[in-house]
Amino acid sequence: MFKRIVKMFILCALKRLNHFWNGYLASHWQSYSSAYFTDWLYRYAGHCGDGCRVNGKITVSDPRLLTIGNNVHIGNNCYFRSQGGIIIGDHSHLSRNIIIYSESHSYEGDRLPYDSTTRKKPVIIERNVWIGMNVKIRPGITIGEGAIIGLGAVVTRNVEPFEIVGASAPVHIRKRDQDAYNVLEKKTAYGAENGLPWNPGATVSKRGIGDGSNVVFVCSTGRSGSQSIAKNLNRHSQITARHEPYFNLIRLSTEFAHGLKSAEVVKNELLGLYQHASTIPSDKPVYFESDQKLSNLVPLIHELFPQAKFLWLIRNGCDVVASTYARGWFGDITSSGKNAIYSEFRLAANLADPRIDDSEWNAMSGFERNCWYWGFWNSEIYKNFSHIDNSKTFVLRLEDFEQELPTLFKWLGVENQSVKSETHNRATSYRPHAFDTWSDLEIASFRRWCAPLMEKFYPDKVAFMPPKAR
Image (tube, rainbow, N blue to C red):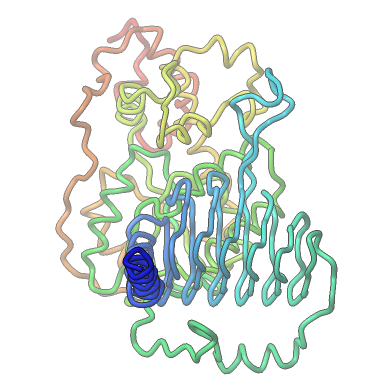
């Protein structure tokens, strides 16, 4: 009898404990988990718009390569393999247990069943997309605006805008009513959590790029003051300036330069970054973005956003090469871990420059490769700018930054304000390979690749004295 009473007591206690756990504690844990991972997303994602929420736990392999627009909701237990880039457009809702891969192992490599190399293909989810529970999306997929992906689908092909698909392999069910869709889009009638009305109020601070009006893209070689100019101009009351905000451009720019992706494919990803996902700050009238990886993408950006302006920031090639060479660019040591992307997508002349074949590139010293890069990348900018109306381009020597500010502000259409000029990202962990220590062979390499543009922009520099006259 006593044993039965004890057993009943234990069972009753366990039931109460289970009820307590599944009720009070579970709901509080869910709230805590949602708050934690939502905050984590805002802290570490490459970009995250306004009004986003994670309803539980989320795993992202490299959050720097995840771009999220406004009012995006992500369910519990989602897994994003983001090395190839994942873009989620405004007002898209993703349910629970969704798996998205933008990278896959190479099965045609040196080992079986696959080697350590991977193939990276971005996944782009456009605006107003609804993805059901347990959906799996393979690398390279684009899901068009307003599409709906049914429960449990395995998405192995692109989904057209407004298309509704379902089943384990996507089967076309029908199209959404586009007239009704357009009416709601015009009213900006978007659903928030659980489909309740989205009321952004005055909190929305990010937008799409539109036609590019009041947007300025800054092109350079890197180590040319691109970070400094962004930080200094960001102090202006009418300018929001950012430096290298899109981690995906590291990959995308090189893939285009190497001929691995067509212009149409690249434009599709640029639209995802700049249009479908609202990540452009809207608190000031002018948006200013500096990134060396923009330089070869200028024609595509100009085609997509015809009202955008472009600034070429150029620095004395002697100083740039001294810095990039000492920093290890194009060297034999490759980056690893989270910085591996820089080595993996470092520009290669034998793939980007028709003048250079494999044997010549492999025979070049690290120093000469840096010289080639300064000459080639600036030549690309020069060529690309020549096809754009002069009113939309501006050439600025870094050395002339302070004295050119009034002219620059006039071109931007903003007030001529006093902006304190400070140097950022100065070399501290290494000593630049200063010009006065260069050998005759190094000066000859520099002259070979950099002379035309140096003579145009820096004709007074000693780099153009013959080696024996030094």
